[in-house]
Length: 438
Image (cartoon, rainbow, N blue to C red):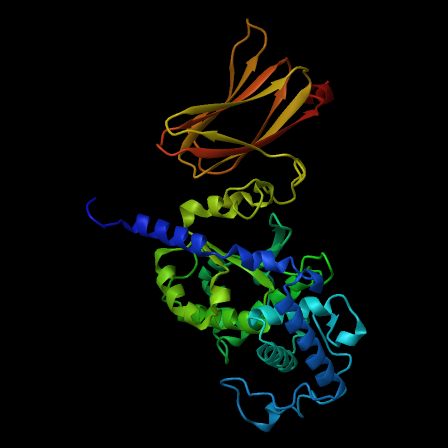
């Protein structure tokens, strides 16, 4: 390689690294600052002004007066404020279950108001306008009734909550590979209003996820989105791309600071160009929340934010569905194997009549792996549990011990890069099957 010529693989690596280096950690750190006493003086002043102006607007029933129309909104009478019943008494108005009238003294009110202030760089007039438009949109969109809508069982595993990150934020997964199914794709987009169904489904998923948040002092009031693009329809599927773009815009404008980080994994090459164009509609603050990982870097990227016991096995972690062997509380150990080196993990068992169960994964793969049991008795033979093979996924295995010895897990790294090994094990008493057969 000469000069500045790079392969496609290297370009993707550099894009991933640049996005992660440009990611502003203060965006996340600010989310933990909910109490006014922890804010900077300028932020406290803005919050106080916001509270006063919102209180007055609600008590005088003019929260929706002089509201600027949304772009691309029709000017029909059906869209008027009066027809939307927004001029009725609004003293009990709330957002995500939190009363917005500051004088009610709800501990979550300031938390909600701070989200709108942060989204508008603590410019009170812009934050108030954003809140007013959000409340009007929620009335028009009928977000209160959207949870009752049925979009079909096929979509239940496309957007779902599973675990939390290192800071306690709930993890919301969106798996776009499901839309490669032609029937699902046609059912979603071949309707009178092409993108409406998709957007309503995304908003429903968001509203359901918000129910797992806590708008209280010390509570977790934001989430992490993990979008999986593995096997997702390519750029030719314009309806999905357009609908996704509209959904992201809505989430930015109507759900400020609810998503603290957007991690996009299994990113194909074409998506970088698409995101560069579509992200122009996003604020810089929103763009800073995005982190990208191509297929070979998924586990490495997720581990920066999520503990291995909370990362699903399909993404290189140790979390399995309906796991009756391990829980998130079980300790995970970490070992590094250097390039061209061999690492052996030994599990010593002094008492027979037990079963050893273990999980092991290697970040970045490209290693070989074998399992053996070596009895303490010098006259015994080494027992091969698993012959050496290339490691392509997280491994769970077990072995019944009928004599003292040790289980050895051997990882051979034939690459020049060091690899991180994550593993855990447990030893549990076991009654051998032959007892039940006699």
